[in-house]
Length: 135
Picture 1 (cartoon, rainbow, N blue to C red):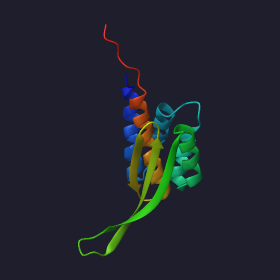
Picture 2: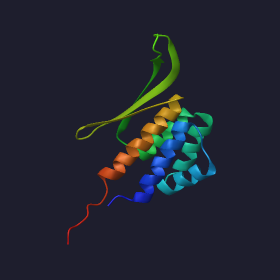
Picture 3: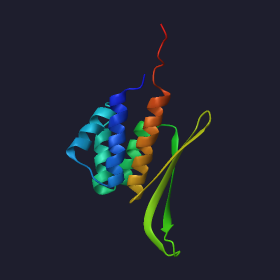
Picture 4: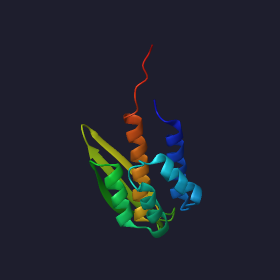
């Protein structure tokens, strides 16, 4: 059975990252929802406050072993074809046993990577949730 509190916490964190805002309450959500044996919350804070790619890498390696990352940027177009609103896109991939992809766009490469990490961690929780037994 999926831990609803963890899933709700991760959804709130994803929303905070998308908005580019990070509060004390968001830090508390990190502590509650990410693996406790890792100092994952510190890495999330470093990504959010400092756009730290090093912190994103540490969090990725700790939370998602076996996933690889591909960062690239993407320019969005207006109706008249002029580029505007530069967004960073990140995709992380796992090849085991099938190909799984998670992607996200955000205002910085580190925040796009963080969004991918949080989304993939949610996927991990869903895939590894204990199955309910029918009694």
